[in-house]
Image (tube, rainbow, N blue to C red; front, side, top):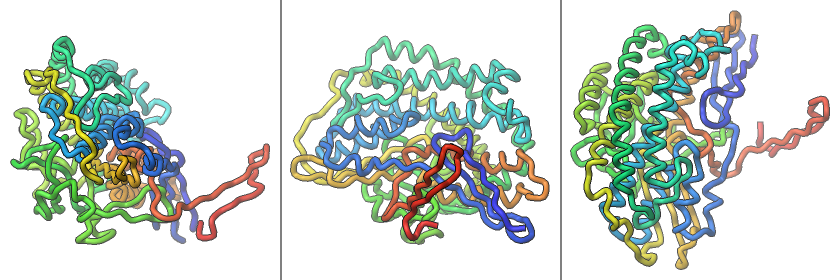
Length: 477
């Protein structure tokens, strides 16, 4: 009974992907793969453009995490100029980044994952969505919408636009933040704290109802990578790379993000437009690692804020080593949201935040610039090489979802082998496979870059939808 089950498209994720589940002769799952179907060649689009245009262009890579791209791009530009960014500009960038973390995590948890968590993995798919959640618990759904709105409002007031802001530039930022904007944002804090507390309480209450999913939706040993500061605290804007293994042992520490190519690399598989990142000393695929909320909490010694530290201590008690269950990405996101609100409150009280000294100017001083920041989904790198005129000759974007790609594939296969039964196939089984992907909150549009020759297939259909011709590269399966 060999055959194939296909989930196409994957729902409640950003971008376009499918899953193929291959069955053996007994009708059991032999293999499952996560295929990213879109291709967007941002790295090639950069070539020939002046480096100072990159932040504005890179902010348009993604509509969900534009701040992450503009910050990594701006920091690469800072390195090309060889200057020190004014403190007020750094504070603005940090504030926008926390707003980014808040709004993106709120979207992931409340809108994309809560229908599974609160309504049930086997709930009717016609109501297992945001609208069904609104019908069952309108206050909880409204709070999620409002929390995301708070994060977006931070981005709008700091960057001038809640989607694709272009205020951060090489050398600093282009806008002064007003006192009235800070006062408005302070008015959101009490509600934000209350919403995160409610969400944390709800999720902890229902975790016991999902023990099987916790154990089989991507629970496996791996490396974890993230940035921390000199004291081992969570660091989203600036920091050093730390890598830990499944037992929580530090594999590498204080790695310079600007030297990422010395210890990280990317491999390609023919069945996906998204590459697979790995830790060079261990090779591929053994050196595959996870990034994002789960990884950041695993590598951090402390959060550095009072409320989040209390939650982090409890989180680390869930395992004797690193927390390896990908299902706990959901809990990690909520803890990071709490941390973000605390840091936003701190930053809004910084007098320097409203300074008019926001940009340092200089001529091109280097031919290579690398910028890194923690995006909501994990560590993000922008790497630019320029010519004597400051035009980009090579660009490399190492995206967080790409770095999670190997782990997503392992999670998909683990979930399929545990839950999918071809002789009694039910929608809830396939939803669990999709839920394994949603744990990582993948952002596929900005992660799809081909290495070498891209697999390509073109089908020609007639008016009835019948394939009349197919063109493919010779090595395309």
